[in-house]
Image (cartoon, rainbow, N blue to C red; front, side, top):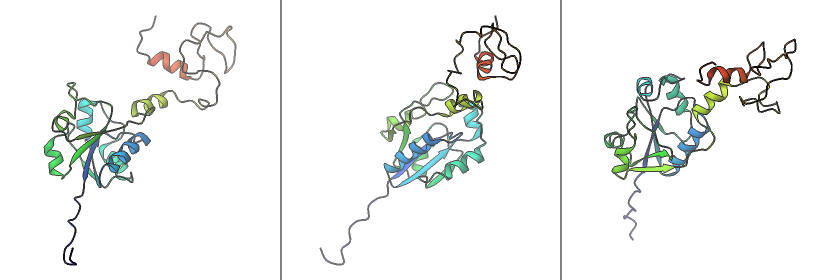
Length: 201
């Protein structure tokens, strides 16, 4: 090979991810890390408040806050604001992306349609492993049940099947023998009883 000949430049592999990215946690970051490892340049589409509300319900963080949170993740090269909820080939082509990456959990529209069915049919979809044990829904649940001593107590404070206390004591630690909850400050057990969706007896 002569000095004037050059190797052809390797094509940059551009990867697309999209999502709500509400209450960003390490599961989101881990999926984006895996997606970036599949290519060279990672573009992340973040859905608007209107799209998220239509398909999943209102987000905790506004779209502007969610755009900033995703931009702060080190594997993200570029954020596309107000990305469509259903990923299309037109979206991938518009941003020059070779394929789309999503976790191995299914995401549906409000009508029950797989949001990735178009890119899957075109063989422009790859899966990464979802981080088990963490989700936005789980975090919201944890916050609703949070107490100051929640990591310190030996009891299973989240169980609604705990036996009632044997006697009706006085003071800040008193519990009702009928409900098993404190008469004073709300506890996680009390919150669970009121938020379980069951009608009172």
